[in-house]
Amino acid sequence: MVSNIFIVLVILLIISTPVAITLMMVASFPGLIDPSFAANAHFVLRQVLGGMESTPLLAIPLFILSGIIMARGGVSKKLFDVFSFFIGKRTGGMPCAVIVTCLFYGAISGSAPATTAAVGTMTIPILVKMGYDETFCASLVAVAGGLGVIIPPSIPFIVYGLSSGASVGALFEAGIIPGILIGAMLMLYAWYYCKTKGEDKEKINAVVNEIHSKGLFALLKDSFWALLSPIIILGGIYSGIVTPTEAAVVSVVYALIIGLFVYKTLCFNDLKMIVEETIRTLAPIMFILGTAGAFGKVLALLQAPQTIATLLGGVANNKILLLLIINIFLLFDGMIVDTSPSILILTPILLPLVAPLGVDVVHFGIIMVVNLAIGFVTPPVGVNLYVASTLTNISPLKIARHAIPFLIMFGIALILITYIPQISLWLIR
Image (cartoon, rainbow, N blue to C red; front, side, top):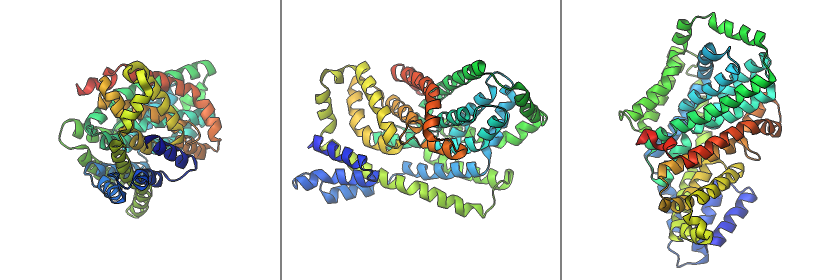
């Protein structure tokens, strides 16, 4: 029965059946084949509805709404100016400022495509104006945008927490050092690229001098509220003042205040369009979350993880080999399935395999999300590739080819994160 389920699942995904419908059909399949099976149609429907009745789930639409408000409010430009002020004149300084901006913006949006769009729209034209190759700029932003799902607050971390039972707050905290590590690895390649290819220092200095002309105090004053946003959101969670769900509410209120009344980059007429965009983004996610809950319950009733462990044989007892196989599988999965569905489908299958080997549930969540973040820049799905492509009119495949060196650095960080658990767990222990 288990093998039949996975065959049906793969076939439906290959023929591009919507993920939510695929999960619903697969979850209902055993009950249709065997009427005596506990998970009949009524059971599946109850699980779908129950999967959407969760307080932590409220954080997802709220963080999406907050990220869209911040994007519309032009927060990314203010962040970029601050980082450019300090490192812009150094070798590779401007590309590195883009990466740091993605790190900070990820702490606001929690979404990789949103980070790519918000930062890329503003920084790619600036970098091209300074003489950087446009394809390099597009690949830089596409890969660095993946940091949006690793640096907390991260929507995939919330999804994984709902699927695994892990603390969302612990996942947020555990994502900080891995996110910084990956950012540092990306900056290392950006420095090497600029060192070997050369930079037009005259053009760069002209742009940076214009930023310097504003004065550090004036620049910090203008960017203060943008820089403060991740501190308010994450500080509230880590200090215990608010839960992740309550922090999501705070982030929306804060985003509205600075967008409408502080920076005045938004008006009340914009709110209708922002809410509509949030609903369009959220609706498919909610349906997937509900159907994934039913799918996970059916897998548990079928004892799917135990069956897979038996098929793996001795590998299932070798932590190093098993994690290597899982990483390779997740990298491949990230190429063809979006992040949230992947987490919801694979967590109930993979987590029971690694838990007996002593892999911490939070550490495994970081491994999954980092793997799937690479999927944002790998064809054929590669959402960040398409976002960067629309910003530059460069084909997604060309951007993907130029992104390979960045992805190699991403992969080195993934290996370190996988086999050195302290990178993820140090802050929560």
